[in-house]
Image 1 (cartoon, rainbow, N blue to C red):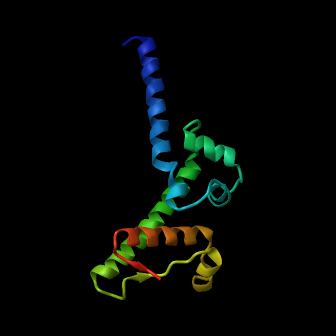
Image 2: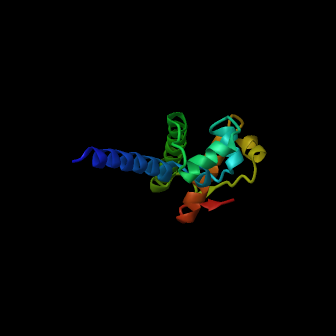
Image 3: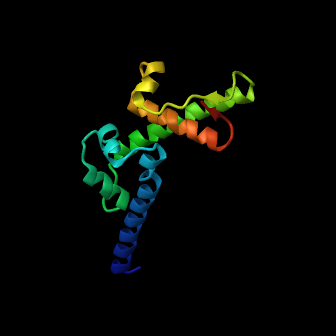
Length: 137
């Protein structure tokens, strides 16, 4: 392999890795029904919407810290889904999940819950409702 081909393959590999990262993580804001502004306040905590938009466009790689936060949010969501599905499978409780239209109504029940917890909860409710596993009230 020539040096030029080797360098070209490295460039392609790096681009592929970045595209893969962007494809896997850029839509998490949408996944949790968050605006770009909310993502920059609650996930990156830097209020820099330009950086978030560059990540979504694939122009710059997403920082490892942000990837870790997004993975943790996804893991928390999945744990919540699994717990509810286990209850459904074991016939414990009803299959109704409350829908909270805003953060304050969520915090009236889940007093320790923050914005991210509310978004995770809402995402779980939407997922289970979409698969006809839960009714919303």
